[in-house]
Every structure is written in structure tokens, then in C-alpha cells.
Image (cartoon, rainbow, N blue to C red):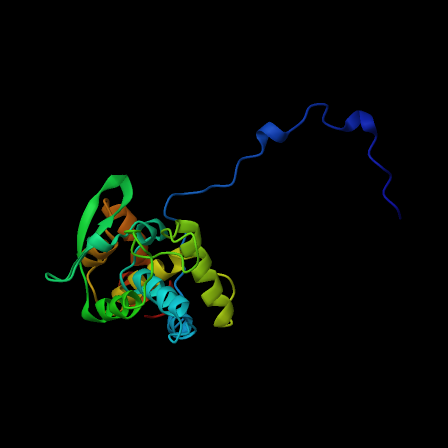
Length: 216
């Protein structure tokens, strides 16, 4: 039997929008989204090292994936920021901080391969446009390099920050202490680094309490 409609006179006469609670959003509740094994290498392998553009893009991706730099930091690098004699790199990070990072031999070799044919004229930016005007790359251009590498590697379009997340996650899973991960990422607060503790499932398993009634 059909239920008769509720008379209009029995409806709540006032809107209840204000009584509906908002969705909770706690800081640090999300998980770092690292790339799967082999995806970063697929992006690096997609660069054509026989071309100037390919060597430049490969060097940019290595900076993001192996040093954990941000896009704006890669774009802000200059030729004078590479200290070849001491093997260090000057990076301008958040808050106008200038930090001195070690330059691994493998990363330095990738830079050398790119710089041999770099034709930026008088531009002192490390990474420059191949075609005129020969100016330094912007952070947007660095993100586009990542997007094109994803397309060539058959991956969905990913943000450049995913490479930074992947580096931190891989370091943590390899047994690197959380404090050292924070130093590599140059976090000013330990709270920023503590986010990555949630991806160390082995360590988290030791903290898990037995399920009631499981006998474990």
C-alpha cells in the first residue's frame, strides 16, 4: 500500500544547513603518495640523451628524483651554484634560505653531460630554454618537463612533488632514520618529516596491538 505524502505543514519550517557538521580534516591525515618501483626510472629512461633537450630534461628529472628538490628550487639554480671543486650545490629553498647540499658523483655526471652542449649565452641560469629567448626555466617549465616524461613513459600525469615523496619513502624503507630523511628534504620542522613515518609499515607493525580474540 502506498504511503501517503507528508503534509507540508509537518515539515521543519527552518533550514538545517547550519546544523550539518563539516567534514573533519586533520593536519597530517593524508599519506605521501610515492611512485611504484620502476616508475621513476621509466621517466628517466624516456629522455632522449642524444639530444640537447633530452639531456637537459634528464638532468632536471635527476635533480627532482635524486636530490628531492622542489620545482622552484630547480628553476632557481644558477651556474655559480655548482661548486665542482668541493662537490656541493647551493639551493635557494623556502623562506629565502640558501642551503649547501652535497652533489653526488652520479648527479654531477648528469649535469656535466648536459652542460657540455648548453647554449644559454650570457644567461647564468643552470637550466635554460633550448630555443630563443635563451632564459632560465621557470617552475612551470620544470613541471611541464615532468608531465612530458610521464606521457613518454606511459604514466598518468603526475606532479613533480611525487618524485620528492618517492625519494623520502624509498629512503625510509631502506632503513634511513627519519631525522636523516628530514635533513635531505630540508624540512624546518620535524612535523613535516613525521608524515613519512606512516609509510614504514614494518615499523608500524611492531606498534600494532593484537586484535581482540585473535590469540596473537
